[in-house]
Amino acid sequence: MMILVYAQWCINNGLDPVELYSRAYPEQQANERLARGLELTVSKEEAGDITNDTLLGVLTMFGNEDLGMVVAEEIEQMKKKKRESNG
Image 1 (cartoon, rainbow, N blue to C red):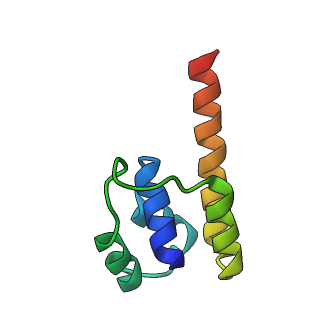
Image 2 (cartoon, rainbow, N blue to C red):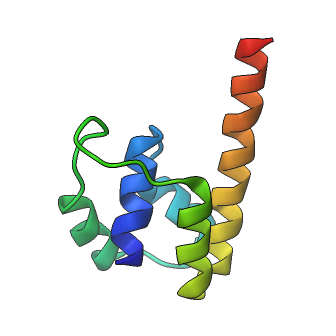
């Protein structure tokens, strides 16, 4: 469940789930579970909204603090870009 929520959140936000995951866990080679999770994602248009807080909560619940930190950094980058484009 955690992997699917993470992967779909990435798709919904135009981010590469594999790249973010590899930043959080550079020592891991390929992640088979993530690859399987990506097969289950749908397009952004078909997906329901996954809030940032929901994703961070799920990552914390499953003990993925390293990935949570990388995701939090991306959330801040997205907020910064949004502020810059609005102002």
